Image 1 (spheres, protein in one colour):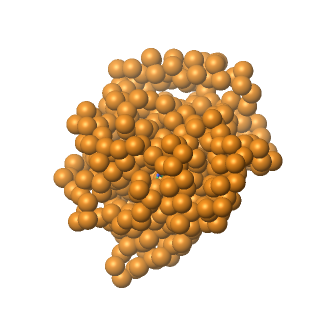
Image 2: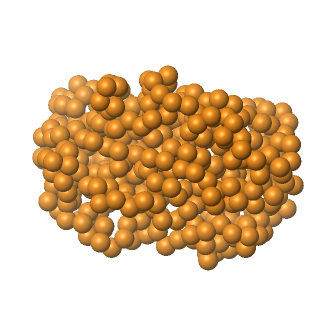
Image 3: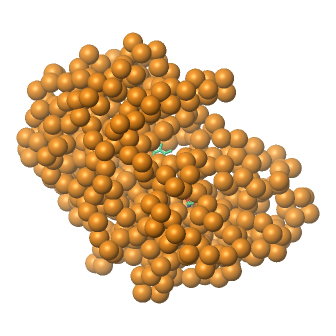
Length: 453
Ligand SMILES: Cc1cc2nc3c(=O)[nH]c(=O)nc-3n(C[C@H](O)[C@H](O)[C@H](O)COP(=O)(O)OP(=O)(O)OC[C@H]3O[C@@H](n4cnc5c(N)ncnc54)[C@H](O)[C@@H]3O)c2cc1C
């Protein structure tokens, strides 16, 4: 259900930002998510001008028996936000770096590409993921699995404070000391506990970076993935490898030798120098000469685009699963459904190495906790026309069935779509999150993409 034109007019009178209702010409352009396949149906959209607009919209929602949902970028959109008033935080773009204290304060609209640019050259970093277009706050609320996580863990666990507008419409600074349970819930439990205006994150050391992408013709896929598993079995925490099997589209933005071809690739990021990194990845070099070799000294800026993911909204279906291992049998099983001759409409398979600090449990961690599984597998297909959704979804199910023995029961929040909470959080974590939600937002005025209540 959308707001009536009277309600839209009333809300416009309460905020400084733009309110877009269903009768406005920009409605279709404004209501969508990053995933173009989702026909997202909010009640209205508010492009907030500041924190006061968030507070005013929450008050408005309470009075009208509605809910609000933050959606800065929509990379994690699910159907749960339908019927809510969507809050877009594009105007909250402040970045305040305190090098002496090793902390950065970012507004809720700051994207990773902007934070990486601000920190480039400082020798310090936060914990970015693969996509520069996701917001730092949205990513950290859901955990945050990034390039430096094997060394420093999930981004959520590095948050020192959140500034939010709570369900009563009041501004609140949440720290471990001010409200330990709420602070715990916000660090990985998602966007159910308040609309975050800004977050303070502890910075980590990254004085030297080396890495990039190596690409081989697909006939080397078995040996490349074997070398990947060999290296990752004993890799130091400073080294992160992500392996790929992909069918690159025949489109102009793909360089000519790679366009329209199945290839295999490995992305490397090493917190250290070239010599040490090259020693560690020697088994990959021994497979064959890559057809494209992008390994070089890296700036933090370059990390944001290393995985070459689309930053523009994209019509695709993606699935992510955690893998309890990736052995020779798993490799054979994957290649049966993912090889070029398989006729699969899926075009990308990505295996991220986790482990290291991701796996180290610590009582001080938030709801994101630690992750025991050593790999994350992401796979999916493009759905340029709705008719392709069914075959792509069916192919995703085929891969899941084929890899069932290696797929973990648990999934991480940031990479979850419509999966139920029971697949994301362990029962004890779910109960603890429910207790916090009941205390801070008993009327469920604030709706995350994975509702707790
Ligand atoms: C191409 C792609 C690559 C990705 N790569 C990674 C990766 O490497 N590592 C990783 O961990 N994740 C990754 N993700 C997942 C991404 O981190 C999540 O989708 C995350 O939600 C951030 O996206 P966003 O900023 O667009 O948030 P949105 O999708 O706009 O928001 C997602 C949810 O976060 C909550 N939220 C966001 N902002 C606020 C706020 N200010 N206050 C309260 N709640 C809020 C809300 O519940 C909202 O529904 C990727 C996603 C895509 C599509």
